[in-house]
Length: 377
Ligand SMILES: [Zn+2]
Image (cartoon, rainbow, N blue to C red; front, side, top):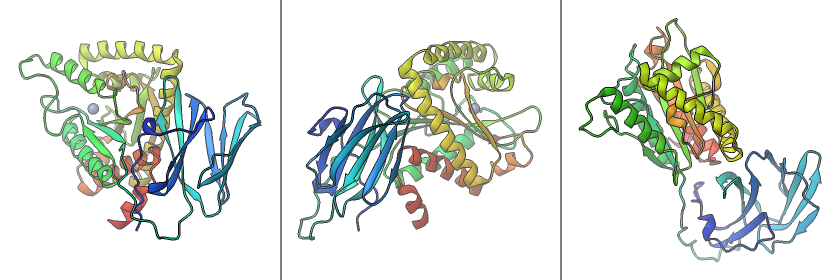
């Protein structure tokens, strides 16, 4: 049986037959054809498919009418048509071909890649087994908040213990779906060198190291935390990098940024980073992706757990400040709420939280495997 998880080939290694901003390559050995549409960061798009046509509506303006014949097993022709508020791209499929999946990858500076894979029509079955694909597996960084000398918030549960347990659960779910996972910590420790004795100094180094892990050859970054409130409050909230005018959110950011003078200082630095990002087109594009990731994770976590949704917000979290990939911080619930705090102590509740986070990540990575994997468990 064909597994739903076909590894993602390395885009740059493909031999493109390129008419410009739409490119394609055959993966005939693996039974599919890949089309890549390169778009400026921030361009909106949506796809809708019928058996014969895949339509991609983009916010891309000023494209001229064009028809491409890709000489390809899956797609007979591609028509680019100016449409109201953007450009429409119609893929007319060959008989027997079908849409496999779509997902988004980082592009060169200022651009991203919308990737569309089509299943080629089946041959008569005489073909040998497909050769082993050369995969570029998506890499997700999970950041269990706090650790070592910093317990995080303490209520009915201890934050550093909950975040690590959740990260390990999410890791297992993602690995089942074929995703590579990197944990910023995999035990009860922080990331500062042993010889640093000052706790605030340790915290600063620890946060800076985590923040650096939002760069490089990785696809997504998710930091996991537990909330607390002076007055009883409950629910899930998801953050991406930005400024805030909300004093409650600001206090939360200061607390998560180390608290005290350090927290205030790092929050100030991060606010200025966020201001720069909002003035920078490329960074803006990444913030939009991060916001999208935050929305999807919030939807999936509240869907799996029934927890109250407290919404998606932007805030100056230091750990998100250098992010060059979609990066969010999830506050999974309130440690000191009499109901939610006790739920957070329960294994079955944590499992549902983890399933929600993993489902959101997989949804954004454009991988439909999670639903199937979940049913088979
Ligand atoms: Zn925290």
